[in-house]
Length: 208
Image 1 (cartoon, rainbow, N blue to C red):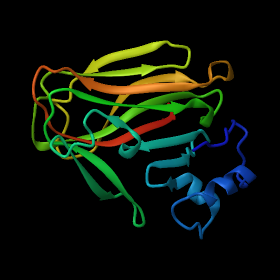
Image 2 (cartoon, rainbow, N blue to C red):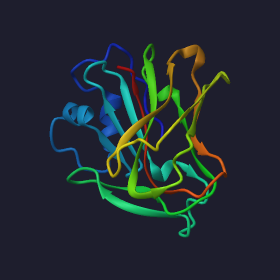
Image 3 (cartoon, rainbow, N blue to C red):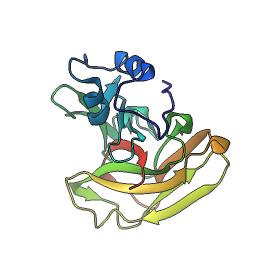
């Protein structure tokens, strides 16, 4: 779904587009609207939107249900789990059972973000205790609307087990002349079988 663009001139009072946004939230908004915009509102349990208090920038989390995952619909390779995100909201995360080729990817429209800010794109994930296949690094790729590509490798082998961690895909500046669709992905080659990765989603937020 589309979200109105905010600018650096966001005020404390709630605007018309914020009112419209809250009408589409999963939960009934019965407290201060701005409180919900700061803590976050959920949409179809697939996305979360909030305003960063430090920068007043738009932030999003795209949960696993909106990500493209190779063989993600095959129960032999992946398992969908429902977890409690807040007291009122449950989300689905995707647990890797066993695959040879790993690819997780999606797209996002930067017109939903705040002009003039530098943004981070990060995966949120977990490596379970009983896992294997992570000695070789994964490849993280970010493709910007103008076609420029950022790509690097990072090892998951030394990441803490059974707790959520973040891994950066890349960063970019939001500018009207370069609005459009970004593409981001995490992949690992067919060199061995892999198990134990849990994917929660991708966060797109102003860089600190």
